[in-house]
Image 1 (tube, rainbow, N blue to C red):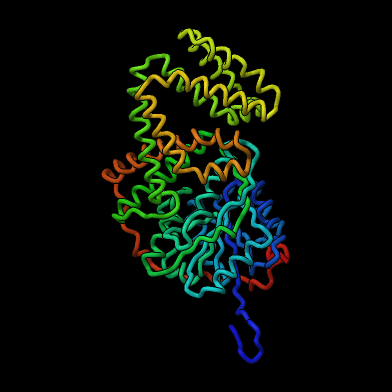
Image 2 (image 1 turned 120 degrees about the horizontal axis):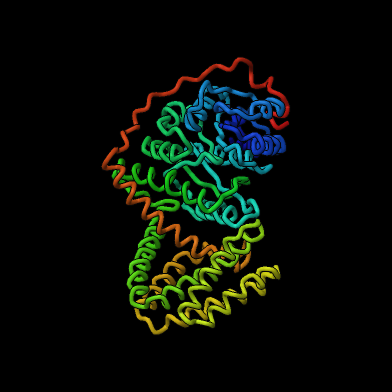
Length: 451
């Protein structure tokens, strides 16, 4: 509020209740609560909703001064967050995951968004550039961060990794749909209802948190396919509207179509070129994935060596001794631990593989489609290169292109699932009633409040 006489700006206080659902997450929860305690802005309260944990999550939360709200039985994060929001007393409910650590300025930035724009009903941020050291964790967290930071400010969704909403709005809309009994798209569905109710949701890339989750390739695939692509497709079909936001915007849909064209050209190209063409394409992707293989080897995995033996055998059978020698040097190059040498080696191997495709028109057409898909995502690959170097970005390219492939498969599976069991409309969820706190939030411990 601005007063002309004093020429001063006086802000109304906006209180924040943090709600954290947890199920057997004691290690990450401790780091999460420690980060809240270091916040430069103290939340009004910190509510940890225990979703029937069997580890020491409750003891960790209680020891660090958070208010623990037990769920009588495991019912999923949507139900746990709803329970926490009903018990909250703040003007804003800030949802964060138990494996997320806020920055010291995160809560203050969230308050600023609501203070500066009274029309905003909800805001969410992004992951920061930090992540666990393994390749797939780095890739997945940075992909998520890039999507949120490059998105338009006005959003048509919501995110509970670090998302805040006005408490009265949340309760009036009935909260999250509790039919989602596992981590899924309950936040996306809630964001959809928010916007349809005439409320504004914004994404602010300056609001950042650290994500501690570790991803393996299979875990990433399972999450993207079964927890995102398929249920999100069903939600889109239920609403009969395709959103143009985040990772389903027009650019991403175009890139997915181009990757499908690449697959459509690659299959007949390999059929026509035979084992020689198959070897060249497999070797090309193998060398592109160099950083991924190096990371797997550092962690004691033998997959890069197994794939090298397989490709080396294929090269020997086809009589391609150049690729055989290049692939055979894999263990030696990996053992040096020198990124520059590994990068030169991978580039040379890729060029050697590509040389065998220059006389195949269909392979050239497939390569052109691949190049177009890469150009459409050049900003993302540049972002990855700035974070972890060109070797990491090169390895991320085939992984990212494969993401489009299984996303399309997920969309098709979502179509079938929608026809078999369509999502029922949930726009009429009844408002939720608040639950009165057993004690005032002001009596919460210093750790719970951050100060």
